[in-house]
Structures are given as structure tokens and as C-alpha cells.
Length: 338
Image 1 (tube, rainbow, N blue to C red):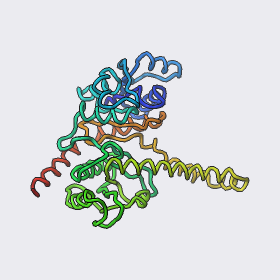
Image 2 (cartoon, helix red, strand yellow):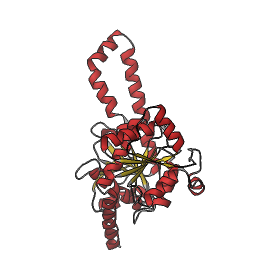
Image 3 (tube, helix red, strand yellow):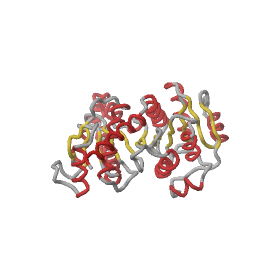
Image 4 (cartoon, rainbow, N blue to C red):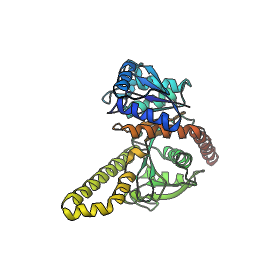
């Protein structure tokens, strides 16, 4: 299996990407094709004693920056690591693509270069979010700001497939993010989406879910438009960071707090581990014809390694093929209703 990795993407590139790729080669037995500034990557590997065994390098002369306008960058920077990597994926020179680079450029590139599954106009950005009972899949979390009911139904189908194939959960539950649990709540679009989800084949829809109940982790998939999803995701990250910071201050405040920390050290470590987004690696663009994984821009080696693990699982389980079959079933059901 060959996983194409953008060596220039993210705040900590290329060092963190190299470290994560080397760890993935060792732990998961994959081959990595690294795209980027080959001279810089080799120099970084040499200076930090990182082995390049199992890592093939493809040289690129350009980099898409976070401030670049996505569509223009994809059109104009043909020799950038993102464009070269996505073209390699399209041409069958790799099985999946992983990048911590520009989310917008990856979204445009996945749509225009790799192309989308039949029935999907634009891929949805999905991510596993830590929660009390268990992590849940949130989609869309930023790629499509406005969505029609049909798009949300497709997100639900793809999200169910992902949680089943990648997370190994049978008959995953799907909920629609809304401002109330009742069917009558929400905008006209959300009311229509609710009714559509009730009859969508291949998913176990459990109704609306209020934002205050989302962190409980009682459902497997939370479906929403990209604007709502991005707000949920960033608010969750902010609250988690605040609470962990307050907990640390409490333990360091006095001798009693320090003694309490010693007694609770194991539990605190478990909590930090549970809330660590890098454990899940990245956010897949569900709806692309081949696996495209967006690692967090601030990813360190562990985040990159786990994003490559995600890509490997997607390929092994033919996630995209499974999604296409489920989407075909959805399209057939909608046609019958018409």
C-alpha cells in the first residue's frame, strides 16, 4: 500500500511530517510517497537522524500557503505538493493522500482533481470529536457552509459508512444537529432534512440532537451544515482547552492540590489522552472518489502518523466503494419516491 503524504503541509512541516511518516512506515508497514521540496526534506531527515526507509520522495517546486485563495492556488500552482499529490492519487500512483495543508485547497483539489463519488457534488469534511461516552463523527465541519436537505442525507449515509468501516461500530446511530429535539424545531431546511433522514435507507436515524447533548457522545454521527459543524468543533476545542487549563491551575495552586494530583495522576492522564485530537489523526473528505485525509494544521508527529493510519484503514476497507454502493441505494430510493 502506498500513502501519498504532503511533506510541506502544516505548521510543523517538514520535520513533524517526516517523523510521523517514518513512524507510520515502521508501525503500519505502509510505503510512503512524500511530495515536496526534496532537498529540504532530505536535509531535515539527515539533521534529525530520521530514516527514509520505505519513503519515496517526489520533488515539487511550489507550496500552497494558508493565505492563498484555494481555487486560484489549485489552478496556478501546478507544481505544489497538494496538486502534485492529488494528481498522483488520481493517476493511481498511490492509494490515499494525507496533508496538513490548506483545508480550502484540499477541498477544491479533491473535488476538481480526484473528483467525487456519483451523487456527491462537493465532499464533506468529517472529523472524530472526543466526547464523554465515546468519540463521535461530526460532518460537515467546515467544507460546505450552506447545505440542502439532500446533501445532509448523503452526509448521513457517508458518515455511517465511515464509522462502521473505520471505527468498527455496528449499526451506528445518526443525529441531526438542531436547536431542539422535537421534529418541529429548526429552520425550514432542517425540518425538511429531518423528514428526509427518517426515510433514508442504510442509516439508523435517531432524530435531532441539541448542541448541549452532543458532547455526551451518545450518538455515533452528528450531521449538520459546515457553518454549524465548524462552530461546534471550535467551541468544543475551546471549552476542552479551558477546562484542562483550569484543572491544571487547581492542582498547582497549593500543596493540597499537588497531593490530590498525585492521587489522581492516572485519571488525569486518561482524560488528557481521551481529549487529544491527534489520537484520531485527521479529517477525511468524505465523498471524494479516493481517500483524502486532512490532518490538523498544527499536527505533530503523532497526528501525522495517525492520519496515515486512518488512510490505511480507509483503503483496506474499500471505504469509497462502500460509500458509492450506499449512495446508489439512496439515489434509487429517492427516485422511487418521485
